[in-house]
Image (cartoon, one colour):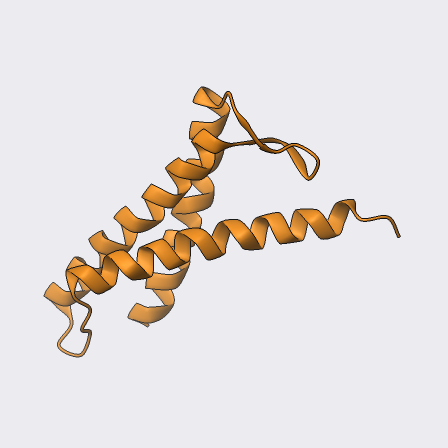
Length: 101
């Protein structure tokens, strides 16, 4: 159960932070042809949010579970991977939606 949450919550945090930070502070367009509203500022915020939430929940799960094991370094690496994969998935889905039929 912990691993499902450690995958889903950072993905949600990544998307949410990217949306709100990008909407409020976004100035530099990321891939205007695919999604004209996505910004570098939002992408960076989403990436950092994924790392932060992964580390936070890794420590929470470590304190309440006897079977969950994830070091601080591994939590950061996992957060980076989730942050990148979550955003690439979003861009891939958007790319598919703008392709001609």
